[in-house]
Figure 1 (cartoon, helix red, strand yellow):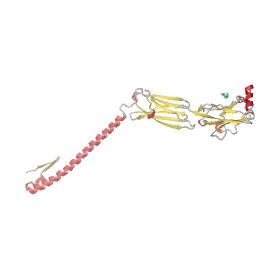
Figure 2: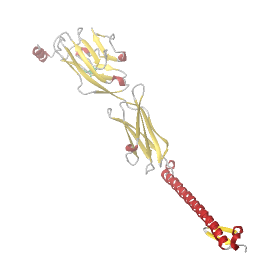
Figure 3: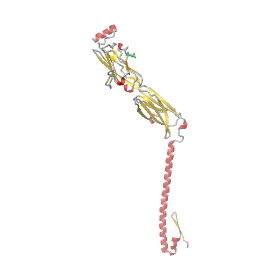
Figure 4: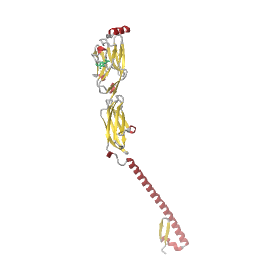
Length: 314
Ligand SMILES: *[C@@H]1O[C@H](CO)[C@@H](O)[C@H](O)[C@H]1NC(C)=O
C-alpha cells in the first residue's frame, strides 16, 4: 500500500488521500518566542494532503489534562479546550488543505513554555510529534542609581524587570574592569512569572567614574544595559577606611594613656601607704631611742615621692 502511494505521488505528484499512511512533522529544535508576542508552532503532514472531514487535529501540552486546540469535523472544537488557551489559539484554515496543521498561540505567557504534542488522527492512521516551546522575556525598564556610601566607595544599585528566565548581570567600569565578582544579585518573580533582577556593587573612584550594568538573556541572545556617570565630587574625599583607622588609633591612644595614669596612681598610693607606715615606725623608734624626738608627730611631715622629710620645730 505504502509503495503504491509513493508510486502514485511520484508519477502524478498528486496529494494523497488521508486514508493512506502519513507522518506528522515538526521542527526538531525548540521554538523560541518572546513573552507577550504571538508564536507559530509549525506542524505538517507528509505527504502533503488535505485535512478532510474524518481527520481530527489535536494539539496537547505534555503537562495539561485538557487540549490546547482541537479541530474536528472541519471546525474548531472548544469544548475540551484548556481555559488558559481560550481565545488564544488558531489553526490556518486555508492551509489545512495542504496538510499544514500549524498552531498559532497569541499573546504568549511564561506558563505556555513546555512540550506540545501535535497529532493527526485519520481513519487508518494516527501520528503525532512533540514540539518544544521556550519563552524568553526581555527586560522592559532598567536603571542604575546611587544607593549610598559604603566604606570608601559608592554603593550602586541596578534594577530591571520583565525578564524570563533569570538573566545574567554584569558590572563593568568605564576602563573595562569587571566588577561582577564584587556584586550581589537578587531575583524576584512577579505575578506573571517574570523576573525582576536587582544587583548592588560598591565602586571606587577611577579614571572614568562611569559604571555599566549589563543584563543578558542567554536564550534570546539579547542584552540591555544601563550606565551611570558619577561626578568626582560624589566620592568621599577622605576615605572611610582612613577615618575608621584614625578612630581606632585615637581609641587605642586614649586607652593606653588612661591605663598608664591609673597604674601610676595605684603605684603612688601604694608607695604613699608604705612611707606612712615607715614614718610611724620611725617615729616610734625615734621616741623610744631619743625622747627629744617624741614631738615628731607634731612636726610637719612631708611625704614626697618616697622621701621622708621630718621638720622638727626644735
Ligand atoms: C503553515 O501556514 C502558516 C500560515 O500561513 C505559515 O506561516 C507556515 O509557514 C506554514 N507552514 C508550513 C510547514 O507550510
